[in-house]
Amino acid sequence: MIGFEKYPELAALFPKGERRERMALVEDLARSAHDNLLEFLVWNHELYLPPGFVELYPKVKGVDYPVCLSSELLKKSIRNKYVEFFQGAPSVDGVVISVNESGQFSLITDAGCKCDRCRRLSQHERLMAVLNEVIAVTTEFKKQIVLRTFRRLSSTICTAIQSWRRFAGHSPGFLGRCR
Image (cartoon, rainbow, N blue to C red; front, side, top):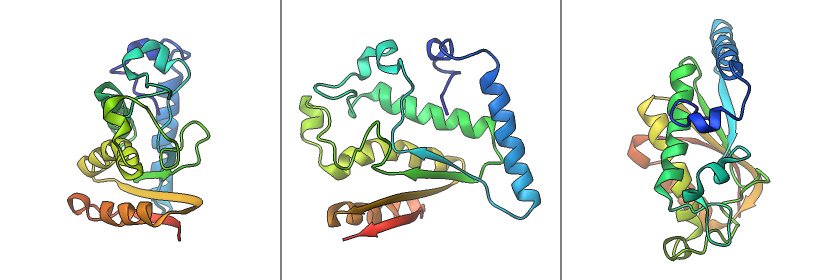
């Protein structure tokens, strides 16, 4: 999922027409799932940035970390990515977000950016800086959101997930293990 409409520079890094074909395929799969009385959710990681993103948008670069989680541009790009996705594949029922396992970022355990704003963020706040954008879009589009992890989570993060369940009346699922 890459928000090309708002970021044409990024779109230029990928073959023309490929995104539209993939979006049409996802929409067809979602409709087929519904025809068979199944829900269709897509899988993503808490934060995934395509190769070249930070170089194209240096304002998102962090201090001693690939990205600054306080960057409004980063938050806006996350939001736009999901808006564009749900507009392009409206039959998709929601997203499954894999937390702390992407290999690219582990927002729960990484120390994160060392800028003045990020340095003061707790583990919970680092994760929520990204997830709040996903929550806002899934709520706006009335889509499901499920968090999952195979890692054992600290009680601090489990408490954060429990509080997230009450966010704006949105009740995400959670698949994981708490200590």
